[in-house]
Amino acid sequence: MPATLYFMFYASLGLGTSLTFLSSHWLTAWMGLELTTLAILPLMAQHHHPRASEATTKYLLVQASATGMLLFATILNGWVEMSWSINEMKNPYALTLAMSALALKLGLAPFHLWLPEIMQGLNLLTGLILSTWQKLAPFALLMQISQAMPPALLTILGLTSATLAAWGGLNQTQLRKIMAYSSTAHLGWSVIIIQFSPGLALMALGIYILMTMAAFLTMKDMSSTKISTFSTSWSKSPEKMVAMILILLSLGGLPPMTGFTIKWLVLEELTKQDMYTPATLIVMAALISLYFYARLSYFTIISLFPGTTNIKTYWRQKNIKDKLILPIATTAALFLLPLMPLTLALTYLYN
Image 1 (cartoon, one colour):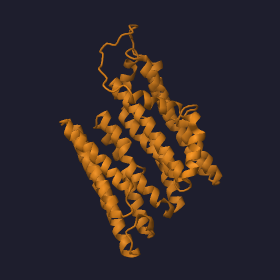
Image 2: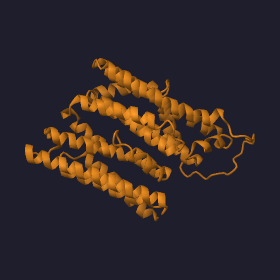
Image 3: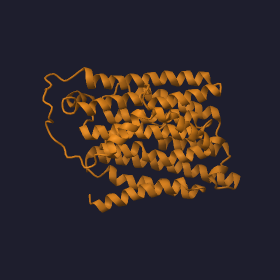
Image 4: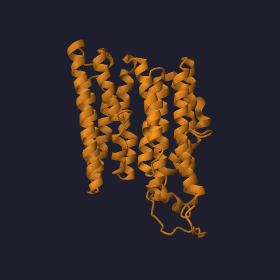
């Protein structure tokens, strides 16, 4: 694919997300969502592989269904409330439909089963875009209508996402499917707190994006898409595999790494709101998630492939064009916990 086409598709992705961010009217927000969906489809189908074509078709059908449901919700609210403003959605039926549509777009449980299957058919770079950038626009709309939603509904949605994603990732051997379930689980932590502290939910999403970016870029650099290939990658680049282990443990929320910040602050806010039962349940779900991240680390460093070599040079040297993004993303995914007082101050200013 020519570089001009890549530039056009990436620019369309940025334009669609920015249009949704700046929208106060449902029609312009819908246009931004459609623009991001149409822009990523050629990137998903660029390799002309049957799995890529299947994933592109499934993604188009899922996103079209979610967009149609969202458009129907906005028409219903405009008919009943005589308003097309995003902040003035008050009809309970329209709110429920809109929340279901945004949950389907984000891959939240129980509407998450499409995400692992589609991720499995994509390359790692497109999977990174689907796991990070494509979450921004629907999450921005969810933040704007979250204050009008019933708090119990958002709590159930967050708990269901964290729990089902943790159980779904247990038996997986494909790294892209594991990252898809990780996406659903981390978004569950953001959704459960969005009603009490939107700034904290936004910060949790940002930290998740940093950790996921570091994980995908490391997997892309090591050309690893299955657990079995991890045991053979140790002899090629021990330093990157150590960084990958730490990134996985950070995704699991193990202190003192960056991922622990999300768990700490969300649990602190839930206890302030006297929501002890949801806090306990979501911690139990986080322990299940931590198990399959620890399982990945076990296959990476402890169960080495038989006959590993002691030669320090690579078997196949790769020419890495961009040597700056991966170290920055890895550092941010591991060592941002000492900056938590600054992030807390910015969060309180936002709220």
